Structures are given as C-alpha cells and as structure tokens.
Image (cartoon, rainbow, N blue to C red):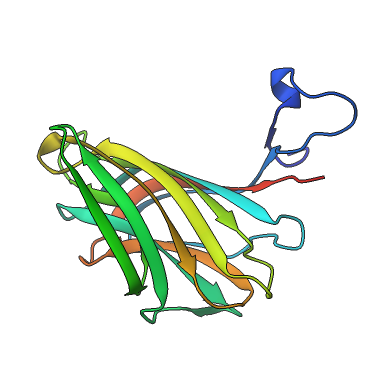
Length: 193
C-alpha cells in the first residue's frame, strides 16, 4: 500500500493551485458478519476535524432493527441516556414520521431494517469536533434502504453528545433490539488543508 486511499475535487478535475480541501482520506474499512457492534478506535483526530462514514448493506439477523451510533471518551463508551437526536423518516407509501429525544442512549440512524433477502440499509454520516475537547461532538446523516416487508425507507437527521470531551472511538450497534448483523463500514477523514 503506497498511502491512504484518497478521493477529492482534484481527482475529479476540480480545484486549482495546490489546495485540495475536502479530500476524503480512508482511515479504515470493516466488513463484518454475525457481530453485535463495529468499533472504530483509530479516528486520527489530531489530523482530521471532520470525519465521514459510509455504511453499506447493513442487514440484521433479527427483523425490524435500527442501527445506531455511540461514542467513547478516553476509551470508555458513553452508554448513559445523554445523547440528543432528531430525525425525519419517510416511507415508499408517502407517509412520514419523526423521532426526537434529548435523553437517549444512542444516536439512531438506519431505521427499521428487515432481515429478508434484499432487505438492507445504507447510510452516510458526517462527524464534527470529535477530537476537540472544548466542543460538543455532533453528527448529521442520511440513510436509505429496504425496510421491513421489503418496502423502501429512508431517514435524515442529526445527533449530538452534549458535553465537551474528546471522542476517541465510534461504535455502531443495534438500537432497541439486540441483534447481530452484517455490514461494510468505511471511515474517512476530510482533509482541511
């Protein structure tokens, strides 16, 4: 391997001069099956202020499962009901629903995924201020996939850990229903200089 995998405006022929702001640099990809969580422990927060996560083909072993995010500070996972989250969910039948909480133990993001053939969820997530101990760590996300009963479903929203701390780990795990799952997740840093 020569160096980190990169993807940015320069690679697409955009940008000028020596600047290449916004370039994605791959930190780690994990492809898992039959696990209860994915943990990213190398966030490279001394290099990146903003992180970007993709999740592809999330499929739980149990039907109707939500994927969620938790943070660890100094190696200790924050499991208390301290997270804030708000999201809008939309369905193929044209209906919408909303979820909001200022006291929840995880940031839920991929909604109501089924476990039948072709039922899976996908998402991208932006993370901000993970390595800045003077700011709150927060996320915004967009998701889509085939939910329960093989119906298309999507969501968009945001979440925050409302305490000033340094986050040194991201955990993806199921919310509400304990279930093993399979997925491919890739974490990138976004180059800002």
